[in-house]
Length: 221
Image 1 (cartoon, rainbow, N blue to C red):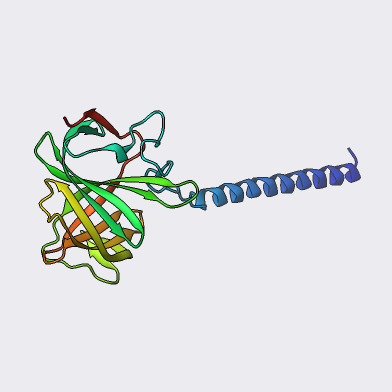
Image 2: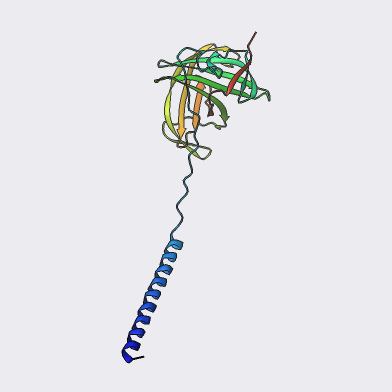
C-alpha cells in the first residue's frame, strides 16, 4: 500500500471516530436532559356539587322521573338519600320577593335536620334542595367579612331579615322575623347562620342534594 493510501485511510478512520464520538455525546446529553426534567404536575379536579334541577314554577312539575320536593307536607314520611325521615314541621320564609321552605326532619336515629327547598330564578328556573347539618358555633356571630370555621375560610354572599310563618312542630313561633347570613368557601361549601329574632345564632353546613334524592314513602293522613 502506498504512503498516500495509508494517509487517506488514516484520515477516514479518524473522521469516523470523531463522528461516532459526537453522536454518543449527543445521546448522553439528551438522556441527561430528559432525566432532569421534572414530571408535569397532575391537576386534581375540584369536587363538583350537584347542579340544581330545571323545574317549572308550579309545584309538581320538577320532572317525570323523580319526586318534586315542593310537594312535601308536614306529617309525611319521606326518604332522603335512601334514609327514612319524618317531616315534623315547616317554615315558609319570604325575603325581598324570594320564597323558600325549610322542613324540619326527624331521622330513624332520632336526629333532627333541616331540609330547604327553593326555586332559583332564571331561564329555566332551578330547584335547589339543601340538607343542613348543625355546626357547633360556641357563641360565634356572623361577621360581615370573611370568617374561619373549622379551619376553612368562608366569605359572605347574602344576609338579611326574612319574614316567616311556621306549621307543625318547629320549635318556633307561628310567625316572626328570621335573621340570616350565608357564606361560601372557595371549594363551594355553604355555611349559614340563622336566628329567630330574640334568640341565639345557630349555624349549619349545607349539603346540596341531586335530583331524585328524595322520595315520599307515605303521605300524612
